[in-house]
Length: 275
Image (spheres, helix red, strand yellow):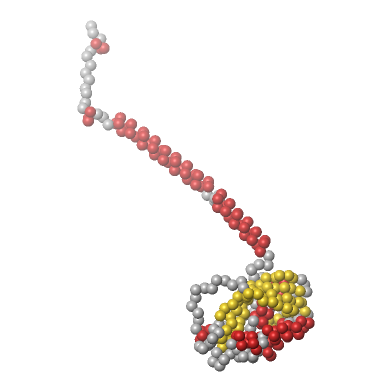
């Protein structure tokens, strides 16, 4: 008697397009879940690194900032009495229109030298009476006579004629004589409590402003070296010298008309200078 194993089996083959899709969907679901998991992990890792590095300075930036700070500190340490202004206020007192009462310091001596340079380079020096007043005001009494004789010779009638003015500094009728000195900077060349030597780098305007002027106002650069002495309660002039330059390259700028120069000289006043 035959057993159940001996009974014939029937197998049904379905067309390929009709195979059940449950197994294929299951196989496709596993790689998709794996890809999503990897993306989540990578995203979390990037966020964690970003948070950990937040607030940390960039090494290159820190090094560059350190080098810049070192250079700035070195420049400050080596600048000494360089071009930076002291911040001290200009003196408030004047004598005969010239600043007076400077501090008994190196900076006070430099301030005095700058203001005395303005007086020495002014149009008043071409008139005998005002020139004598300037010398009496700024000079050390012990050196005043020598300075007076030197300046009288320097501002002789021959010198006045070269500038286009008469012996008393008067310009031809209808014209304006311009002589103005503008300090650009000062440098201490030697300082003690009793004596000082100061170099004053200046630019100046000199000439005759007018329609028919044969000596139009021009610019000049020069350096005045002033020797000062502490006398009483102020710095006083003992001696001075003048050297040409240093002069910058002139700009490509249109020159003003005679009327504009005359108006500027009459309308724009000068300054009191402090170191």
